[in-house]
Image (cartoon, rainbow, N blue to C red; front, side, top):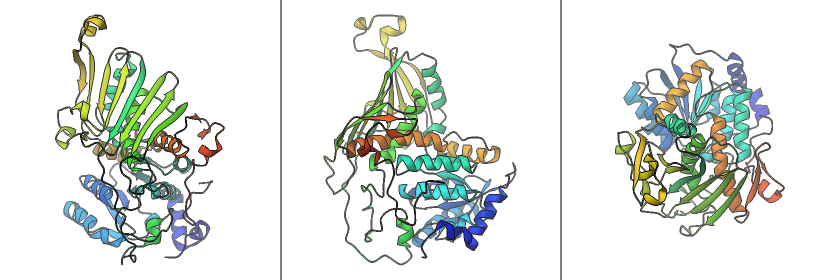
Length: 454
């Protein structure tokens, strides 16, 4: 594949078509079908195709992946549900050049989220991009800038924000029924196996390895997921799911930037050569509210919310729920489940009748609750609706940026020796800390770089 240069790209026939698409800025009528290109059809990409194919108001025109071997399984899903075979293109730039395409579904790995989204915005496409949003704080801010500059709808796969129960939970807290909130806790307790470092082999036929690596270093090819655990490829196995819970807690407590962050933990169990911690305890200070984030990758007794509860009227076993958020108020405690699971509020039994805590013993009671459902379909519905109305979507790129930033600053605290860091939200930099600030921006490989001016 020829090397990529944005200036030459814009002079090329593909680039000219992108400019045409950008200048065209067609409006989408209420009865028009949304024309989509899917960028990245690994596990999550195929999952999103399944959700999209439930809809009759979209048409998947392109399936795009650097690995041609992924086309067949992805195309089969579209054939089965919609009865046509989408086009395949290995290079997403060709999809961006098609003026008929309204939006890109970016379900690539972390390293392609920022540049892929920015280029799509520049080409006049709306974007649905998966989490975690970015490889770095700087990249995430550039994604926000691109969305605003080119007036694009950029929705992010932090779908619990679009779930049916979160608004009522937030209103319960904001109404004062939980009392004053000084403490919130976020959990991301998983069980991962050690990574397997496979042997170097020739690049398989059908894989454009340069395009697959993209902004990350073009290391010798190995089969498998050897790249997970490396900073240049991945934001980390913990942020990979913690991004959801961080977004939930931000929504519930109404906070943006932390004043400080401090990390404790490291690689204690999965000693497989990874650069990123398998144990991460992070403390954030937001004025008089403290947020505690507890994550580990070696806890077999913690469990994600079962599918039977995610989409039904039920609540998880909270003490052993691996993806929960706790909001601690002076009047009660709220448990909230990410990915469905609903929410419940507990108070000391005597507290509900005005009693003293010393009289309550160990008995609690539930005084408020709501069942929930998973939010992916709602998130996609909101995306499609906002493409037509041009309103800011619920899981907007800037909200995702602020939530993912919490994951990034904890990682940076770890990378500088588990030091407590002061953060300036106005500049999105650390205060008087050159060592920490050098990690604000990912190291991208030429020519796949995010430029200062998007």
